[in-house]
Image 1 (cartoon, rainbow, N blue to C red):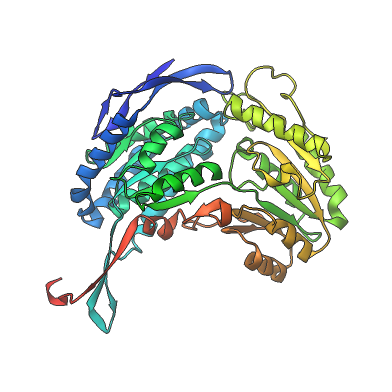
Image 2: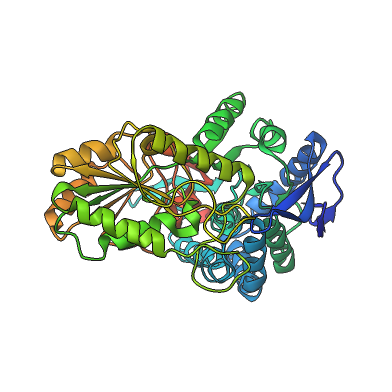
Length: 481
C-alpha cells in the first residue's frame, strides 16, 4: 500500500501538522491502495501563508516567463502521462486504457489550449487609440484556493492550476480525498518543472475540514470549486464573509434532444456518452428526449447499447467501463435505480446489483429507463452513474419545455438534420453549452453552466481571465511605459 502522508508546501514535501490518516480505496477491488493524511487548520494556514508570501514576486514576473514555466510543465507532464493514467485508474476506477488515453491526456489538452489562449491576453493596453493616457491593466486576483473533484482529476486540476499560474496567482490545491494520488503526482511534475516555492501548494483534506478552512480563509482572495451544487452553496456562504471571488462548476442533468430526422447513430452515440466514465461526468446526457414517432425504436436501441456495454476491472485492458468511485456512490446509485422502479419508470436494461460475474468492486449495471416523466426523481436528480432516462416529446416546443424544466443548466445536446431547428434550440436552451450532432466543442471553448450548474467559465481565454483583476488607470504616461 502506498504511503502518501505528506503535503507539498512552499516548494517541499512536508509531514502534516495535525492530520489524521485516511485509506484510499481501489474501487475495482474494494481494497486499500494508499494511505493519505487529512490536513487540519494548521496545515491549511501554512499553505496559505506560503502562497501569500510568494504572491508579490510571482505576480510581477513577466508574462513571457510564466508562459515558459507552463511550457516546461507541459513537457514534464507528457513524459509522465502513463504514470498519471495509472494513478487515476487506481484511485477512481477509470479503465487503464481510457485513463491513459483520455483521463490523463485531458491535462495535456488543457495545458496546450491555455498556452494558445495566453497569447490573446493583453496585460497592459490603452483604453483606445484616442485615450492613450487611460490604461487598462490586468493583474492576478491573488491567492487562490482550488478545490477539485474525483471524477476527472487532471481535467479539473489543469483547468484551474494552469490559468492561475499564467495569470500570476499563487494557490493552494485541495484535491478530492477520494482520489488524491494523481494530484500528488501533479505536484511532483510542477516541482520538477521549476515552479517557485510557495506558488503552488497542495494539502489533502475533506470538504468540512480543509475545504472549509480554505474557502473562509481571510488571506485567500478567490475560491475555484468543482463539485456538487450542495457543496457549492456551502462554499459560497462560507466565502461570503470575506467577499472572495467565487468560481463554481457544479452539477448537471443534460437533455439530449433526438428528433425524428436525427442521424442513424444518434441514439447509440447518446447512450454511450451517458455511460462513458461510468456515468461520472457532470455534462453527461442523462435525459434522452426522443420525438414520439421514433420513440419505441430509440428505446430498443438504447437498451441494446446498454446490454452490449462491457463492465470490468479498471486494471483490465480493453474497451469497457469500470466501477464507480466508492461504496457511497454505489449505494446512492442503487437507491436511485430503486426509486425509478418505485415511481413507475419502465426498466428496459440493467437494474439493481452488480453485473453478472462481478461480486466485488463498485460495479453498476448500465441501466436504461423508458417512459420516464420529467417530474420523476431520476429525471430531476444528478445520479452520477451509468443510468439513462428516456422521455418522449411531441414537437420542438415540447422538447424545449422539458429540456429547460430543470434546476441545472450545464450542457444540452441536439440531434437533427435541420440546421435552422438546431440553431433555434441552441439559442433557447438555458445551458452554458450546447453540442449538436455529435460535434464536440473546439479548442479553447469555454466550459461552464447556468442556474444551479454554477458561475464562471473554464478553458481558453475565459479561463485565464477568471483569475485576473481589471484595473483602470488614468493619467498614464505613454512615453514612459
